[in-house]
Amino acid sequence: DNLYAETIYRLLGKILTGSASYDSSYVAEHLVLRKLGMDVSYGAQVVDGSGLSRHNYISPDFFCRFLRAMAHTDIFEDYLQSLPQAGEGTLKNRLKNLSFEQRRRIFMKSGSMNGVLCYSGYVLPENPKDGDMIYFSIMTNNCTAGSRETASIIDKIIGKIIEY
Image (cartoon, rainbow, N blue to C red):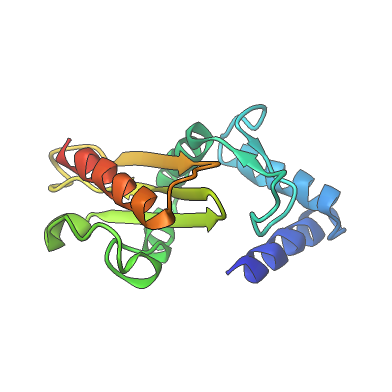
């Protein structure tokens, strides 16, 4: 929910810097990302917490670096469970071309605005002992095709990723 995301962003600023201004929230965001071991000098420009500003710029590489950093934290299992799985919730109509077993291995977050459709997340290995987790981020921007058509293409791309 964008309202909650905005509130958390501002609250983060208040807790870590003493101010809930956007500038303070930006400073707090960078403190947290650096604590995760992330290089924040490239790949992201965040001006609000909701993600709705057209002045926000986040690259797929940045999302993959973030996903990788989160995977190496003590709270990863809780974080992973906070993400929707393919075929349920906000992703209810996504990835219907995959089997149930394949959909259960995908945890991802979606984001959309007019002309924008993004999916970032994890594909867990079929057998955790046999492989590594895959981090992915697929983003479309200024897309003139309809969101259904775009989502269908992205579903096919994710299907190819899970086959990998």
